[in-house]
Amino acid sequence: MEIRRFFVSRCDIADGAVTIRGDEFLHMTKVLRYKVGYKAVVCANDGVEHTCTVKEIGRDYARLTIDCSKVVDKKGVSITLYAGLLKNNKLDFVIQKAVELGVDRIIPFTSANCAETKFSVDRANKIALEAAKQCGSAYLSRVDELISIDEMAAQLKNYDSVLFAYEGERKLKLSDALREGKHIALIVGPEGGFQPDEAENIINAGASSVTLGRRILRAETASIIFCALVLNGLGELD
Ligand code: SAH
Image 1 (cartoon, rainbow, N blue to C red):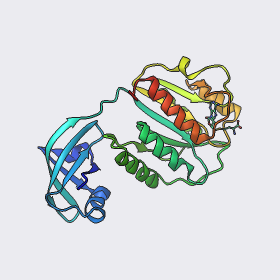
Image 2: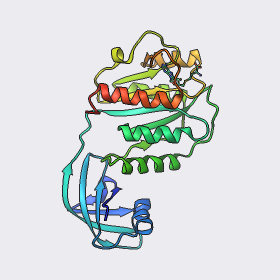
Image 3: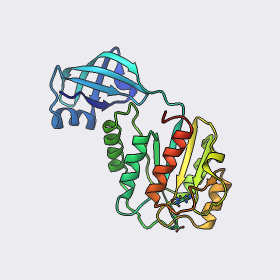
Image 4: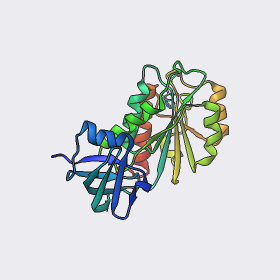
């Protein structure tokens, strides 16, 4: 039987045991029909995999004992992707791919040229959870609530480095702007791109605008290639 992966909070791991609750409990017991004695791999978003055995299944929790734990992935950097909200659920695709690549946090934003207004943070986090399980990650990426472009600009001071994929930037290449840091933010616009004053505000808030080449990429292509190039440049895809 395939050993399935589950994510828990760190506080659900104590004294050699793990408690699975909420949606992960329902998935484990109702969808996968886990029983006492089954094996599971449990992660708590810290790069450690715990191989466990189910000992008890309660009404709304399952208790597992840890058979062995090992560090499988130590990230040197935390990447946050600010992504302009896209039409027709196209952000789902961006979330899935960003999680597969190892992005830690995705924060969608609205701006003047956004054609979409609807966004469900619960649905987005389900997509992130599924992607983390599917790609065998020991980290659970988080998707935040939708914010405005001004709120995004106000948050940029919290990062060591902010890289802004701007279709209006012709000179600065990513390889020249990439700097080491623990917390790095990436910004990619919606289908309609950025208004000049929006781009100026983002740059004034401390971001370095970079070009992703002389062709205009679709927003979802830009997000994926941007994340991949940055993660590779920082040695996180080695
Ligand atoms: N409608 C805009 C393009 C938007 S592309 C226009 O015609 O100019 C969507 C987003 O992808 C952009 O806002 C930017 O963040 C990113 N992007 C696409 N191509 C890019 C490029 N060549 N360089 C930098 N960013 C790019």
